[in-house]
Image (tube, rainbow over all chains, first blue to last red):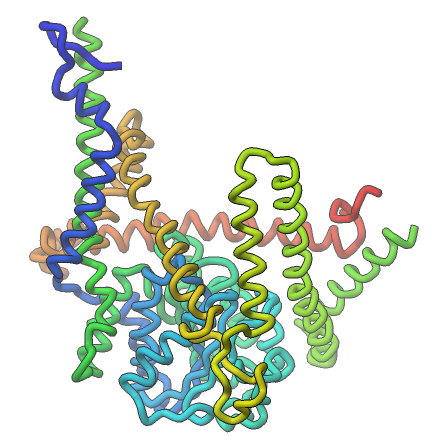
Length: 298
Length: 233
C-alpha cells in the first residue's frame, strides 16, 4: 500500500518502506562479502571477560591437565571454532596437557580439526597419550558431566581409538573432574557451559577453574554465572577476536598465523553488517514516520 | 497395574538415590550406577529416534503427501551415512592392522563418511545458520519500529549492543578517558552496564524461578504425584 504525493506517484519514502526485500538481501550479502574479499581488519581492545579467560588459563600452573569440551556442531563453528583454536594454542603454549571431549555428537570432529590444524601445526612435538588425549563424544548430555564429576573412568572407558584410559599416561590417574586444573566448555547451547556449571562446578566448587566460550544468542543464560562460577567467558566472535589478541601478544606464531586470527577476520564483516542493520532500522523508522505524517496531513 | 507401578518405582528409586548421592559420599557409587543406566538409555534413544524418523518419512512417501521427495532424500542420506559409518565403507586401512577392515579409520576426508561430513554436512549446516543474517536484516527493516516507550528502549539497547560488539564502539567513544566522569558514555561501558546489571538481574530472576519450578516438578515425579509422563493406555 504506497503513499502518493500530490501528483499521484508514490513518494520516495513510501517507496523506501515497501522496498523489495531482495535489495536488503543483496546489501547484506555485499556487507559480508566485501570485507572478506578486501581483507578488512580493525583493531580490537580486549574486554574484561576476554582478559579473565586469558588470566584463568595463565593462572593454572604450567603442565596442568585441562579439559576442553567441544559442545557445538558445524552450524556454530564459524562463531566458535576461532576461540577454540586460540584456546587450544594458548593451553599448549602454556605447557598444559589437554584432554578433549564433546557433549555434542559432531563436536568430536571439530575437536579433531583443532588438534590437526592448531595443536599439531604449532606444537608438533606434542605426543598423543602424554600431552593430549581425545576422549570424543558420549551420549547422555548432563548425565555425562554428572558421572564425570565423580568417576571419569566409568564414563569414558576408552579414548576415540579404543585405547583403555588406564594405558594413556595423561588420563590414567584422572578419577574425577576435580583432577583437572581447568575445564573449558566451548558451547552453543544444551548441553554446554550451563550444564558444566550446574553439574561439575557445583559438585566440586573451587576444585578447578571453569571458563567457557559461548555463542552470542545464549550468553544471557550464562551471564548469571560470571564471574562467581565461571572464571572467564568468551562471547561470540567479538570475544574470540579479543582473546586472540591476548594470546597472540604473549604466544606469537611464525607461520600460518591466520589460523589463529579467524576471530579478527570475522570482525570485519560483523562491523559492516551491524552498521547496515542500524541503517536499515533507522530507514524503516523514517519511512514509518513519513508515512504517518502524510496520512495525518490528509 | 504393573505397567504404571514399575516405571513409577524405577523413577522414584533413581531420583532418591541421585539425591542421596549428592549429599552422602556413602551412596556415591549407587548414584554412579544410576547415571550409567541413564547414559545407556540416552544412547538407546538414538535408536528410537531413528525408528521414528523412518516411520514418519516412510508414511509421507507412501501417502505421496506434499514434500514426500524431501522425505526420500532424508532417508537416502540417513541410510548412506549409516552404512558409511557402521560398515566403515572406504575406510583407510590401519597401519598396525592393514588386513583388518574394521580397524581402519573412517573419519578422515578420504573415506566416504568423513568426506560427507567435511564437504556436505558442515557446509550445509553452516549455510543454514548463515542465512539467518539475511532474514534478520529484512525483519529488522520491516518490524523494528519505535512505536511506543518499550520499543524505543529496545531499539536503544539494540543500537548500543550492535555498535559495542564491533570496532566502531571504540572508534566512536574510545577517546573518552575511562577514569573521567563521562566514561559512562563509552559504548563498551554502556554494554557492560546493560549486560551486567540489567540483563543479568533479569536472567537471575528467571533462572531462580526455573530452578524452583524444576525442583517442584522433580519432587512431584519422584513422589508419584505427577504421572503425566506415563502412557494413558
